[in-house]
View 1 (cartoon, helix red, strand yellow):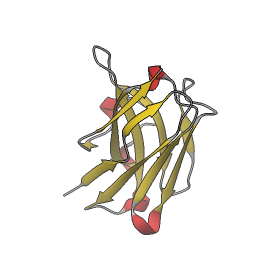
View 2 (tube, rainbow, N blue to C red):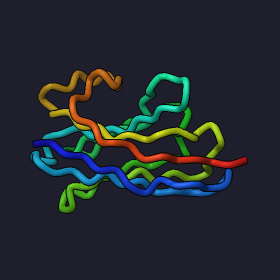
View 3 (cartoon, rainbow, N blue to C red):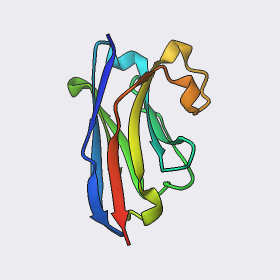
Length: 126
């Protein structure tokens, strides 16, 4: 059974940093693409960043480029999202999601991912 557990959320002032972790179990980590999504109240879930655990290729949404960094520690089956220069508009519940590479279309939409964590709250105060 695929399990994803997020951690590292919290309350931070604008300009601050947080590092989110996504610990995965129940599947062969190297064969998956892992994504971070976020959903703010009243808004649709949006893709933030994703990484291919097989070759380390990454993608970032324009809104986080240059501020967020995604990385993967395959030995620990964990993906990280380092978030710097946080803004109030980054406030949301952040979710980790996974999809087997062989099924992934390359389109970074939430509907492309079949396994999800429970989410972790990130709140950025102004």
